Length: 265
Image 1 (tube, one colour):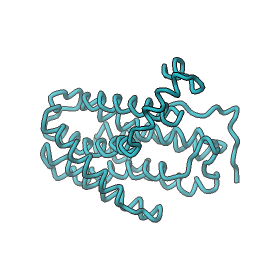
Image 2 (cartoon, rainbow, N blue to C red; image 1 turned 90 degrees about the horizontal axis):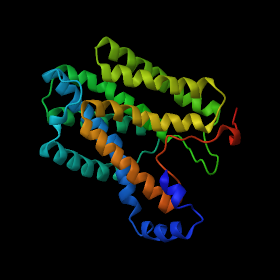
Image 3 (cartoon, helix red, strand yellow; image 1 turned 90 degrees about the vertical axis):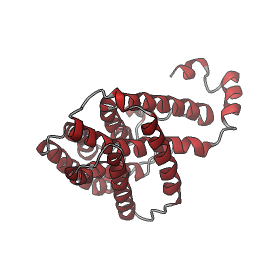
């Protein structure tokens, strides 16, 4: 990132700008990060309906209108408030909560276009994808403290997620859904790497970032204006995190394997 070059952490320029960013409300930017999953699930429902009702699969710029923007803002505000009030006490309860919450979001996304009966069943597999990604994000990960799950612990979580992802991909191919089949198919290798290779923090980093980035990209192929919004949010968060905490997040960059401490057991 250019800011790292022109505003290095130890410089006076960085400290000066950092004081401005530290005055900003961190909860606003935390909410901004949540919009990736909220809007992607919502627009997945819209995408399925558009493809079923209009046979439009790619580069659908005309879907960008006042109503769609208003819907995204309203859904985002309601969901962020709702999610902050929720209390997920266990992994299973968290999975169930996010599944049903995601299902409602998907159906609402369909409703702004037109609800089709088969899509009610398709929604199950779309939401299962996002629910498994949520589980991955729920796993403890702290790069600075070198904190990540032990191999024996992670397999208990990642293997069921892998089985679900394979089932999602198979259903996508069977139902001729190119978005669902390809997105889940591309994500499967990240699970395999984390399960089969020696334990390393970089595997969990990739599981996190690509679990979100892959569906965002595919929904962006259908609704290119959403890709523009997603990239804008991506860079806003990177600059905010850099100047407020000194870390560049979100990022596709993973920790250097040469300094990685392995955890096996």
